[in-house]
Length: 488
Ligand code: ADP
Ligand code: MG
Figure (cartoon, rainbow, N blue to C red):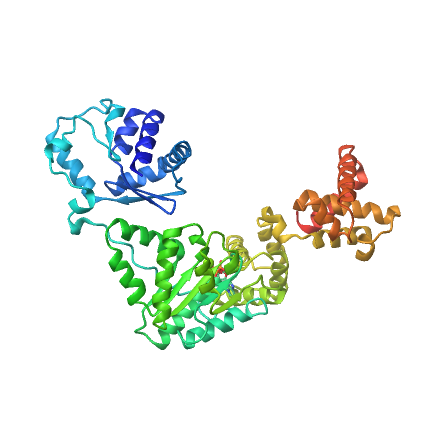
């Protein structure tokens, strides 16, 4: 894969200034391309940060372009790693060479073996027996993999609010935590973002540890597993990697497994990790944003492993659970929250719990800034900033309801077939607003308005649009009032 990097270097050299190329890019070495991750070695942390901040996206872009031309597998991400040995070599080279002006850059043809070797730097001459990096590097200078992330102390069963939307996942998690490796192995929890999956797996970890402080628990995301795996391969530490995940682990909590989609080598590694642990009756808990079968580009044998234990979902919480979550969070953080405000927030923020928490935090900050208690006015103000994600917080039903209220028509009529103007006009306005504010599709709106044809919705949308262009006062008033009612 070195030739892909070589040609990317050539492109970079043509794209950025010679000074910049020489200073930041020339001594970067190709470290590998595995599962779409292009690893590049840089000599030190300063250069790493600089390249990361200034050139990473350009490098990725050019490399992807180059891959398209040369029908190589294209990288999807870049990992920069520090290679202390590079620094040592650069220093050694510098001490044996005369000072080199940046403009004296290497001719294009001298880019060899994945790194740029300038004819003047004496690198090859001063090290005639130059060996490949991995064997050349003394062990002590090898970078160490980052330690596995700790459990998040904030996520316990105590502060997890149980409702119909997460009952099953919660019960299964509690069961697994009280007797790991016996029932429900693996436990597979799936559901959309911000619905409590990470919270639950952390809670499992805490409980297992509380019952058995000596237990070895590994909690990590599939992304981290992937990075460590790649790192271990490249640094000849795969034996240690396997020992850690297969032999020294009592409970493996693997978050966001969907990250492995399309990453064949990492999937293969995880498959063997899974089997080793399962065989030894060690507990495995996996989370995902979708049902096992729906993870794209996932090996069938892994999917069937995931389905072999317990599969539980977490859904968006219903309004009562949202209120309870808000009250729990508020109590935990010493925020005074009335039932009325909790209800209001739970009505406005429906998408996920993380969003709900964010709104509560914003409200608390606002109250502090203004030095006033949290009341409805403040709550309305705090939720105004949530408005960009309209489709998540305002639904078609909300608009229909607001339009019904404004015009004094019944919901059944709004969705019904009556063609009298007193009903058809509000109906058209509601359709227009849903399309304009939420972007809902015409066919979808047709069915949400009592099974109408999409052309009916389209012509309503056009008609109201026309009236607005003509500054029709009544339509303008209605729309302004409904918008205001919905806080839009
Ligand atoms: P996911 O991993 O599913 O994306 P998280 O577990 O990170 O979601 O949850 C997002 C936030 O919402 C976290 O701060 C978590 O504590 C909180 N949360 C989610 N569900 C609940 C719940 N049922 N009770 C209390 N807090 C919750
Ligand atoms: Mg998560």
